[in-house]
Image 1 (spheres, rainbow, N blue to C red):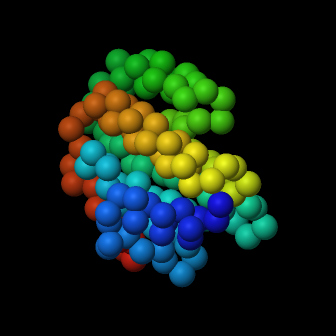
Image 2 (cartoon, rainbow, N blue to C red):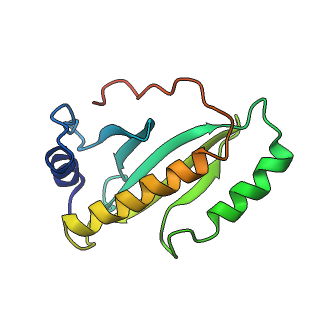
Length: 139
């Protein structure tokens, strides 16, 4: 299933008329107050990525939070599920790769529901985030 079809399907299934795919097929929406981006993979890869910024470790007790995040990251949704990452600034992300060859929309929707639930659980481990704006150009 191509990303543009996923974004259109989500808009319909979740009653989000403002969710429209960009020219590259990408889209963005919020779930549990968490911005989720759906991004295409580079040309030639038949896949797309769901990515959510959950918060930041800046100003937090990283020494106590990192073990909790590592436990939360341990195959929470099985092999090939979502994975937590930490960038150089201390921002925490949840990312999941989807093959366009995977089953139909129902499978993708169920996977995104698990992604959203895991994002919420992991975000709740972090200090209360500041406002997390969506990237410009996304609904």
